[in-house]
Image (tube, rainbow, N blue to C red; front, side, top):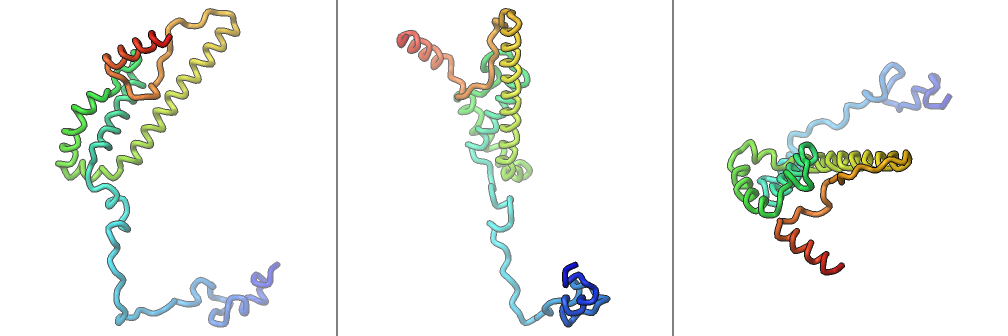
Length: 181
């Protein structure tokens, strides 16, 4: 048993102000209140927490939300390679007025500060979903190859690693690939 926990030494271990019947946590009330002391300054806007983080929506935030929403819709309902995903043209048409609308109302302005944490949560969920689907497809293909069966002919499409291209951009890219080889 340590010297501080020994009942015989408790009086000296906890200090002269406390008795053996008092808790060492209540032995001293601490410094008294001095009414002549000047009060501390009010916290700055930076120190007031998340409310000071983002006062309004920015167009980039709204674009990110639209991209994430499109990716979420594609992951849940998509049957094509890029259906439901936002293109650059979609974002250019939708993001500016959506940003103005979100900044117009107090309620939607108030949630601007939470857009980054929510975007991380949605992005992480989409990453997990895509990774799970890819894992299932790879394991299924390996199982079919092991069994000697012909793997499924239909390609499995996952979320693109880059922003979807417009039809004209895809056509130009295909032509370039054909020329290269």
